[in-house]
Length: 142
Image 1: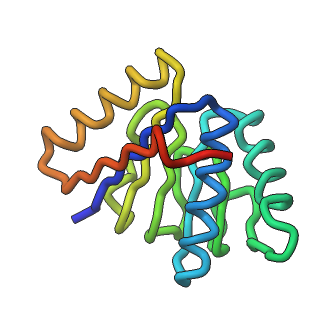
Image 2: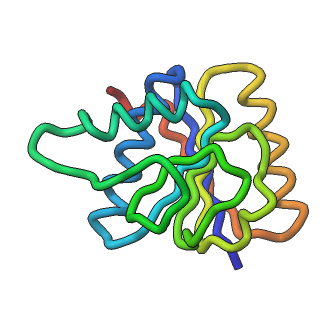
């Protein structure tokens, strides 16, 4: 069964991008494959750029699309061959979430986005998925 983790931030969208990069790097270093599902082209391009510039002395191999690469960034409604970690930045739960071992949802300070993620939390909870909640409001900074 898919494990679902929620990460709550005190900051804005820029802080969310930093957390995504940190989570992607951690997963990659553990040999995991990640698909970042994004809602739009602007988010896709921002994450793509941030991953290139995340740390000077490291490289996180990634690409845009759903092809089976270690780190994929996509706004597609199908995940391709990915099945390990889904970082869902889309406001809704994707229909294919259960094919992943783990789903990560990130909450940042935007009223509409917070409400959407609360609905996602209820969705998973009502269906009995194991949930973890990480409040990084005071500990994660950029």
